Length: 147
Image 1: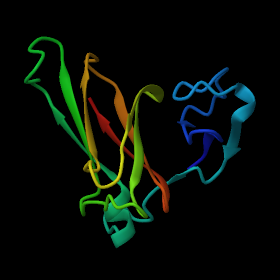
Image 2: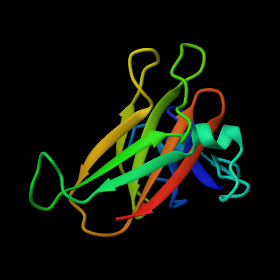
Image 3: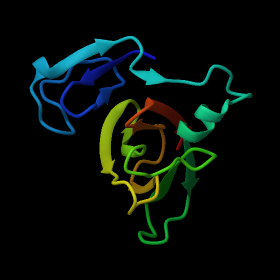
Image 4: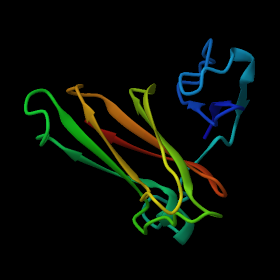
C-alpha cells in the first residue's frame, strides 16, 4: 500500500499528502519520501499466513468507556491474532492511530517491558479508525475499523 513516509521516525501519511512537518517527530517536509510499498496488507483477508497473523493490528472498539462516561469510545489495538514477540531483536516500535486518514496519536513501545498493544479514548462518534504498527524487522502493517 502506498504512503508518504518520514525518513526520520517512520511515520506514514496515509492520506498521501506530504505534511509541512512530521506530526510524530517534527521533521521537515524534505524528510518525506513516497513509497509504493510503505504498508503491508494481507494477500487474502480470509486466509492469513503466520506472518500476517503476527503483524496485522486487531482493533476492538468498546462503546462504553470505563473512564469517561459521556462521549467516549475506547479503541484497543493488539498486534496480531497471534501475539507479536517483544524481544530485544524483534519487536513493535510504535502504533500510530488515524481517524479518517488523519493522524491522531502515536504510542511508543519498548521490548521486554511492554506488550504489543495500546488503547485510546476517542471523542469522535463516527469515522474510520486506522492503526499502523511498525515492526523493527517486518515493516508497517495496517488495520481499520468503523467507529
